[in-house]
Image (cartoon, rainbow over all chains, first blue to last red):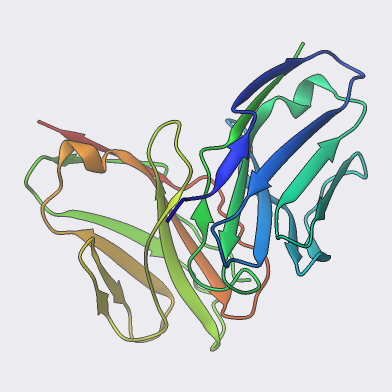
Length: 113
Length: 110
């Protein structure tokens, strides 16, 4: 079956703009979690959604938000982009609430100029 | 979730066993040890997890010390394709977040 799909794969924005990233989980998976990966900070948890509800949130400012739709697809939004938001944003899905094995997408690489 | 400590980098010769250590001295009784790896420019991939018994699957073996304060991931016959960053995480089965940290960068050389 199809894996986790993230779109777009690459994008370039300028400071002050906003961006929306999309994640389609594996069919049947109801939990979607988001991560930011940068060379300096490594792989950091952003938030997790299960059944359209945000279940947990990492230590990121309110400019980072997300949502999940009834078909389990998820989007994350970053408003008022800063240079430091340049990163690889990874989405992962799992059957239940972030338990056990996570299946990751290839990521969306955001560059903020 | 308990904090884990891993060496930043390791080398291994192709065909030899790669033994990747992880320290999780503050692990609690209900926290599992998970291992993931990330090959350059790809999303992390699940390898194995365990609670207190040693575990083995087609990819690797996981050895957890009796006091559960440390563990070792073993790739029995490393290949060049095993070059990746390996993450060790300790978390409860019902925990929400996976904090990956920076992992161990394993370089397998010919």
